[in-house]
Amino acid sequence: MASSVTSLSFLTLFLVFFSISLLTEPANGATCSSQTFSNNKLFDSCNDLPHLESYLHWTYNSSKPSLSIAFVAPPAKSTGWVAWAINPTSTGMAGSQSLIAFHHSNGSLIVETFNITSYGPISPSPIAFVVSDSSAEYSDGVMRIFATLALPVGTTKVNQVWQVGSSVTDNVPDKHAFQTDNLNSKGTLDLLKGESTTTGGSSSLRKKNIHGVLNAVSWGILMPFGVIFSRYLKTFKSADPAWFYLHASCQFSAYVIGVAGWATGLQLGKKSEGVTYTGHRYIGIALFCLASLQVFALFLRPKKDNKYRIYWNYYHHSVGYAVIVLSIINVFKGFDMLDPAKKWRTAYITVLIILGAIGALLEVITWVIVLRRKSGNSTKPYDGPNGANGYRGRQQPLSI
Ligand SMILES: *[C@@H]1O[C@H](CO)[C@@H](O)[C@H](O)[C@H]1NC(C)=O
Ligand SMILES: *[C@@H]1O[C@H](CO)[C@@H](O)[C@H](O)[C@H]1NC(C)=O
Ligand SMILES: *[C@@H]1O[C@H](CO)[C@@H](O)[C@H](O)[C@H]1NC(C)=O
Image (cartoon, rainbow, N blue to C red; front, side, top):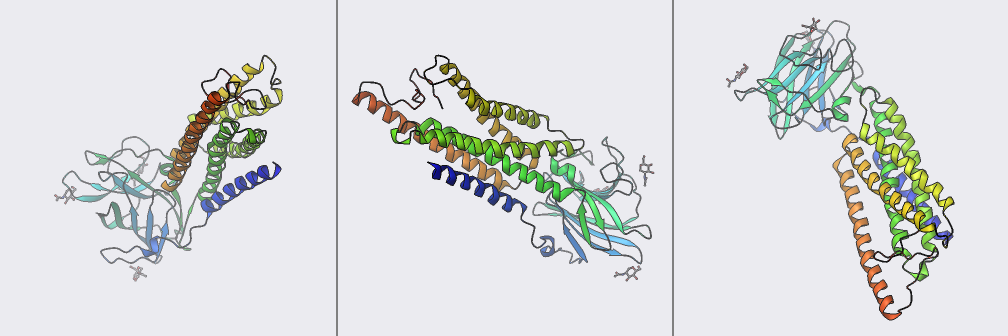
């Protein structure tokens, strides 16, 4: 018994560390260095920007001084726009001196300058920098903006902001989406070092990834697994009382990892200025309360022959299933917010399908066993150690 619990804990730890190491792997080798341009333009530096699959190629001529750029990004839709800006007064969108590429209603892809002062409606206007040689290209789903900006003498760093949007109305770009990626697409370009850094970007991204992994593994995978242990293993006489220990240790490790993940979530929530993800937050808090209730209720459960035990069982199962459903919903809400590479969502959906298939298979096996026992041995079928047997369709409720 002890050995299976130990190996379960090791498996869990392995899963957690394996996924964290995958997610926090440093990017080795910039993608932008392999990008070339059809007009054969060459730039001194390039940076893989950390959001919106965007890239910046640039050359700084300190004697003019000027900055020549090629900004590369996929618009949110083919009818959309891409933008790159320098913000001389602040770090966000307000105040950004922008170059925006989009399709004019006459069909040409054009670049226009916008002095963006607020989230309100925008209109083309001169910007704080003299822009020359501006042009744009669109191919393979990617837009490219080329331009040269005259910078004030002595500039060593600029705040850059970039963005993509999905539509244009009357030759004016419409509002962009407000996903995490859209809100974090800003940073500093160090013209002397050739570096692009994001304001709090990568370390906060790592925290978000750790939060995601801890919670997906605990609430999203281990807890449903623990339910499967209790629901199906107790059909087998030989699995008694192993199922109970497996269920309890699985749920307890899930709870411990889950609380750690929950705490990282609270921290992230505190730090996220301006944006609050109300739904995800409230579901997370509800989950923590319900799961804590489950853990403490375990110690308060009446003896199996107590007449109130049946109510405890009802309570335990309904709260348990509610936790599972809410957990899965919140994992998907988390995916929407964090918007990680598609493979993570796919991997999680695959795990859910596998868990579902295991559950369905075990459900069938359980029924076959129950029916056999009924016909073979007309006395009562096997009862779990707690006096309930765990088959659907019988009067006795499931119990742990
Ligand atoms: C920088 O600009 C100056 C003035 O226009 C020009 O003479 C020089 O060749 C440029 N330097 C580079 C590296 O392009
Ligand atoms: C479309 O309009 C833009 C902006 O007025 C202009 O620069 C461009 O030359 C026009 N293209 C065509 C094909 O007329
Ligand atoms: C941009 O708009 C702000 C606010 O209206 C204004 O103060 C500023 O002078 C404008 N910048 C340029 C270059 O027109």
